Each structure stands twice: as C-alpha cells, then as structure tokens.
Image 1 (cartoon, rainbow over the protein chains, first blue to last red):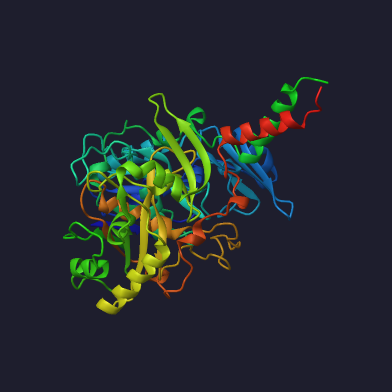
Image 2: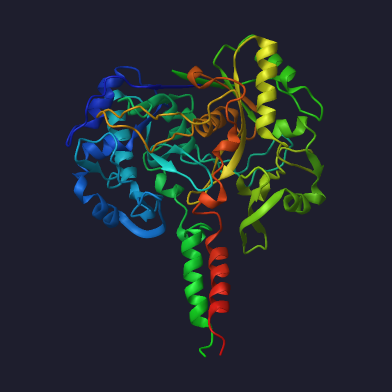
Length: 254
Length: 254
C-alpha cells in the first residue's frame, strides 16, 4: 500500500525561511522512517531567495540557458523557448516561473536542487529522527504528449532509479532494458495530492521505504540524459535548418 | 489522502480471458465509487490475443509504425527505432514488447486501448456496482530524461487532464498555461505499487474520485500531441539529414 498526502499549514515562504523548520512543524510527529517528502521547487526557490523582478524575465531565461533546443512563436506572437538550462534539464523558459509568485516577480529554479534536497533530508532526519528522503519537484512539459507532469529535479537520500538488474520477469528472463525512474513517478504521484491552485507544496509519500537511503546517493542530475546521447537534443525545425544551411554550403559553387 | 495498492491473485492471462471477471474477482468487494484501476497494457494485449511469434518482431514493429521518428544503432549493432505508431504515440519499437511474454512470443499493444479501457470500466461498473474509472498503462521512455515511467495509453471514464481553466493561483492570478496530465501521473503512481518483476499488473488508486466520470470522456488518445504541433516530431539527426539533402539540392548547380 502506498499512501500520499499533502501537508497543511505551510504558509507563504519568504527568502531566508528555514524550510526544515516549516516542514517539520507542518508534519508534526507524522514522519516515519522511509517516508519520502516531495517539495515543490517553487518554495525551495523562494526560501533561497531566487526571486527576481518580472521585467527581467526574458534576460533571466537567457542567463539560465546553456543551449536553445527549440523555439516556436504562436499566432499571438508569444515565443516559447525550450532550452537546456545550467542543470542540464530541458524545459520551457529554463524553469523561470511566474505563477504563484508575488506580483511583479518571477522565480528562478533553485541554484542546485540536489544540494537543496540533501540539505532538507539531512535537516529533517536530524530534526525528526525519522530517516526520510526528499525530492524537489518541478512541473515539466514533454515531447510528443500534451500537458505537463511533475518530475524530480532534486533528490536527497532517495534512489532515483529502481535497479532491476539481476531481477527476472515472471517468465524467469532477466529484466535488462527497463530502468524505471521512480523519482519522476513519485513526483508525479505527489502532484495528485498537492494540486496547483492550493498552497500545499509539500507531500508525504509512504510505502516505498526501500527507495530511501544514504544522503550521498546520486541526485536527480543523474536523470538528465546528456545531449550527446539524446536523439531529441534539438528541435526538428532547428535541426532541419542547420542541415539545410550546411547542405547549401557544401554544394560546389557555380 | 491518496491510496494505491496492487491486486493480488491475478494469474496468467491468456487470449480470450474475461478481464472484467479476473479483475473483479481479484478485487473482491474492495472497489468503491471513484476508484481508478490502472491496468498494464500487457494483460490487455494478452486477453485480446495480440500475441505474435518472436521471429516476426521486426516485421511487427514495421507494421505498427506509421512514421519513423528516429533511429540509432548502438556499438553492439542493436538498432533502436523510435516511431509513431498507429495510435499516434511516439515510443520505442512501436510498443512491441518481449518481456513477461511466453517464450518465443512478443506482444503488440491493444488494438484500441481507449476502447479496451472503456469496456473494462463499463464491465466493472456493471459487475461491482461501483462507478470506477480505468486507465491502461504502458512503460514509455522520454526525450531528455533517462529511464522510463508508466503513462496512460487508454482511458475509460477518467478525466485525462485536470482542467484548471478558471482557477487562480494562490496570488489570485488565473492559471492559464498549466494542464496537468493526471492520467499519466496516475499511471506513474500505479507503477510504484505494481512493480515490473512481479505478476501484479492491476493497481487500484483511491482518493481522486473527482477525476472519474462518464464513459464517453475523451480517451488517452487526446494526450497524444499531433505531429504538426510537436517541436520534436523528428529526431535531431534525421531532421538535420533531411535539411542537408534539401539544402544541397537547393543550391544552384555549377
């Protein structure tokens, strides 16, 4: 049995707030060994002071961008930029977020979400005595599928992949290819109880204690596929245009 | 509170088996109004007799393919084909699956997973009296992120997106862009209790009765982004090569 619930009583988070204290207080004495807390990146960013003036939004996206993957301008003139950010993640607008922020401001992603998750896990273990894991989640779009799902962008003390190596299927054959990204599955599950419109940015997931471990387990950074291994490292239109230019240049000149 | 558990006692599924009967029997009297059952596509395919000889695997992938999105050959000579299948889904090997199948066989995806999900939801509602929803799930890889997560490829009597239009964030601003794909989030959550190695292909999700509705709600087909709206409808290498050829051809001949 897996159980998930959102913590009530987490108020507005402002820069410098001690999130360990906020979460431990909201959880009261509920946390147990093996629980996994899923914390929305938004409140981590707020606590870490990653707030900038909304007028600087486009500049901020540019600053957070390592590489433009694809852009598209809608009929209304709005340009969506899909970019690889400094964390290696591919997402719209480099994760720069204008919802649920104070008027006139936008939020950057946490500086290092894995480090944030580890600090929270370590702090909550010390404070509550319960060996918990922490995931920092963000809402991401996907290729090929409409809508968004929450994914893990930071992990502390949680296995992000389920290691099925050495296991066999029900027919006794080795399970070799499959590597379930349990961190993303847990982040997605947590979104079902947190909601987007309410102020319930922290969920507790109970029932997969087998995934909780040492604080130095690999972080969510290990989920990011390096560009050189990614068949979709560039938008189709952009790759076509690059190829067209190279093809035109390669032709013998008249 | 969201609760998820896998049903025990679902044995080997063979062609022609009545899945409504199998699931209702395994669930005993547990099902309640608003429960969502997540059924692994594998057992739907088996019940529907979508089993072919493994020697025909490559031909089957070709037959299920509408469009090749990208291919890559590994150092060991194994070629991965990412394709759009007849359901519009982009996935590896068109969903043709060789794990957890009888030796010498592979499974095709259900002919129409939305229709399968609706039949199961309708049958389970009649049989148990509980207004349940059904998702048919499959394990899918992603662009940009390693590993796989379970997603919804069929839906019967369940909202696949959460409709946040008209709602506001905690600051009172309208939530316009976000459209959480709750069906994929539920399928992902269910994978956390089903596991890949055990024979527990059906999970019950309790706590989001608000997402359960009429049997003619849009199916999981509505999650599929049409190719002409998809910035990643073609692999980067393939799009580059197409562009290169077109560019070379466009140059004035000497």
